[in-house]
Length: 110
Picture 1: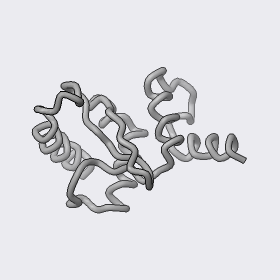
Picture 2: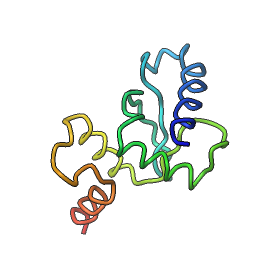
Picture 3: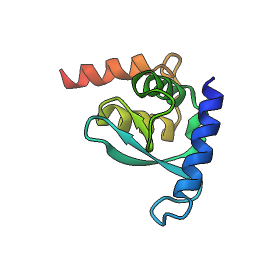
Picture 4: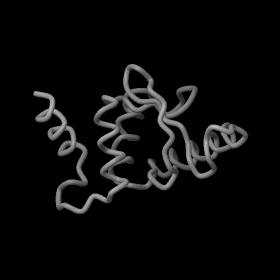
Protein backbone atom coordinates (compact mmCIF):
# COMPACT_ATOMS: atom_id res chain seq x y z
CA UNK A 1 0.00 0.00 0.00
CA UNK A 2 2.81 2.43 0.87
CA UNK A 3 4.60 1.56 -2.40
CA UNK A 4 1.45 2.51 -4.30
CA UNK A 5 1.36 5.82 -2.43
CA UNK A 6 5.04 6.47 -3.15
CA UNK A 7 4.60 5.76 -6.87
CA UNK A 8 1.51 7.95 -7.08
CA UNK A 9 3.09 10.82 -5.18
CA UNK A 10 6.34 10.55 -7.11
CA UNK A 11 4.62 10.63 -10.49
CA UNK A 12 2.26 13.49 -9.72
CA UNK A 13 4.73 15.62 -7.79
CA UNK A 14 7.59 15.13 -10.17
CA UNK A 15 5.32 16.13 -13.06
CA UNK A 16 4.00 19.12 -11.12
CA UNK A 17 7.38 20.36 -9.99
CA UNK A 18 9.56 19.30 -12.92
CA UNK A 19 9.33 22.73 -14.50
CA UNK A 20 10.05 24.56 -11.26
CA UNK A 21 13.52 26.10 -11.10
CA UNK A 22 13.45 25.98 -7.30
CA UNK A 23 13.17 22.19 -7.06
CA UNK A 24 16.16 20.26 -8.40
CA UNK A 25 15.60 17.13 -10.46
CA UNK A 26 15.34 14.10 -8.15
CA UNK A 27 13.93 16.16 -5.29
CA UNK A 28 10.49 17.19 -4.14
CA UNK A 29 9.02 19.66 -1.70
CA UNK A 30 7.38 18.54 1.53
CA UNK A 31 5.50 20.77 3.94
CA UNK A 32 6.17 20.20 7.61
CA UNK A 33 4.33 21.08 10.80
CA UNK A 34 1.53 23.49 11.47
CA UNK A 35 3.67 26.21 9.91
CA UNK A 36 3.76 24.23 6.65
CA UNK A 37 7.49 24.98 6.38
CA UNK A 38 8.75 23.91 2.98
CA UNK A 39 11.69 21.52 2.67
CA UNK A 40 13.23 20.16 -0.51
CA UNK A 41 14.15 16.50 -0.03
CA UNK A 42 15.71 13.87 -2.24
CA UNK A 43 13.31 11.33 -3.71
CA UNK A 44 15.80 8.66 -2.54
CA UNK A 45 14.49 9.24 1.00
CA UNK A 46 11.01 8.01 0.06
CA UNK A 47 12.08 4.37 0.55
CA UNK A 48 13.91 4.88 3.86
CA UNK A 49 12.07 3.25 6.82
CA UNK A 50 12.00 6.50 8.82
CA UNK A 51 10.55 8.44 5.92
CA UNK A 52 8.04 5.67 5.20
CA UNK A 53 6.97 5.94 8.83
CA UNK A 54 6.37 9.68 8.34
CA UNK A 55 4.44 9.01 5.13
CA UNK A 56 2.23 6.53 6.99
CA UNK A 57 1.55 9.11 9.70
CA UNK A 58 0.78 11.66 7.00
CA UNK A 59 -1.64 9.25 5.30
CA UNK A 60 -3.42 8.63 8.60
CA UNK A 61 -3.67 12.37 9.28
CA UNK A 62 -4.56 13.69 5.82
CA UNK A 63 -5.60 10.61 3.81
CA UNK A 64 -4.28 9.44 0.46
CA UNK A 65 -6.28 11.82 -1.71
CA UNK A 66 -5.56 15.25 -0.24
CA UNK A 67 -4.68 18.04 -2.65
CA UNK A 68 -1.30 19.72 -2.79
CA UNK A 69 2.15 18.55 -1.81
CA UNK A 70 3.19 16.03 0.79
CA UNK A 71 2.36 17.28 4.28
CA UNK A 72 4.26 15.88 7.25
CA UNK A 73 2.46 16.29 10.59
CA UNK A 74 5.41 16.68 12.95
CA UNK A 75 7.43 19.47 14.52
CA UNK A 76 9.83 21.20 12.16
CA UNK A 77 12.74 20.53 14.55
CA UNK A 78 11.95 16.80 14.56
CA UNK A 79 11.89 16.76 10.76
CA UNK A 80 15.18 18.65 10.60
CA UNK A 81 16.74 16.13 12.99
CA UNK A 82 15.40 13.24 10.93
CA UNK A 83 16.80 14.67 7.69
CA UNK A 84 20.16 15.26 9.36
CA UNK A 85 20.19 11.68 10.68
CA UNK A 86 19.45 10.38 7.19
CA UNK A 87 22.09 12.65 5.66
CA UNK A 88 24.88 11.39 7.93
CA UNK A 89 23.55 7.83 7.94
CA UNK A 90 21.71 6.18 10.78
CA UNK A 91 24.02 3.46 12.03
CA UNK A 92 22.99 2.72 15.60
CA UNK A 93 20.73 -0.22 16.38
CA UNK A 94 17.30 1.15 17.18
CA UNK A 95 18.03 4.62 15.83
CA UNK A 96 16.04 3.76 12.72
CA UNK A 97 12.91 4.26 14.78
CA UNK A 98 10.81 7.40 14.65
CA UNK A 99 9.79 7.03 18.30
CA UNK A 100 13.49 6.98 19.27
CA UNK A 101 14.07 10.27 17.43
CA UNK A 102 10.94 11.80 18.95
CA UNK A 103 12.01 10.84 22.47
CA UNK A 104 15.48 12.34 21.87
CA UNK A 105 13.82 15.54 20.68
CA UNK A 106 11.52 15.65 23.71
CA UNK A 107 14.48 15.03 26.06
CA UNK A 108 16.34 17.93 24.48
CA UNK A 109 13.37 20.29 24.72
CA UNK A 110 12.54 19.56 28.37
